[in-house]
Length: 145
Image 1 (cartoon, rainbow, N blue to C red):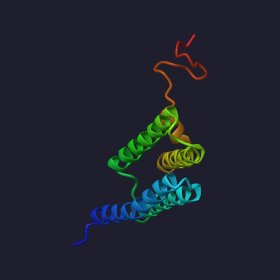
Image 2 (cartoon, rainbow, N blue to C red):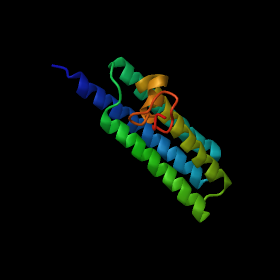
Image 3 (cartoon, rainbow, N blue to C red):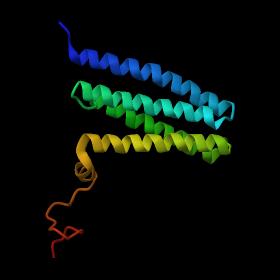
């Protein structure tokens, strides 16, 4: 008997392994050789992997698992922290900084597209914007005077 949950997991893992490793290799090679185009090719492969993941989710009529979401957010946090540390210590030259900034921008767009595809535009906003208990409409402070 075929288990669609396992099939989806293997397909997602295979997609991210193949595209992710090639993406990482191109991105790091671009940083090492100081070639923005090569680093950008690695970033484009991250986009391709993310799109492939969305297609897999659509085919299996499912969303991202809690583990996939946690891994994506943790990866974004680590990459953003490394960019800030590299910038603060002065170890990034202009092209490296541009490549890292491009990667952070792509990851941010990916995060926002995750929110929109998961919750919709209104739901994504509502996920982060909560009115305090007891607040009336138009009362931003929640004291209902």
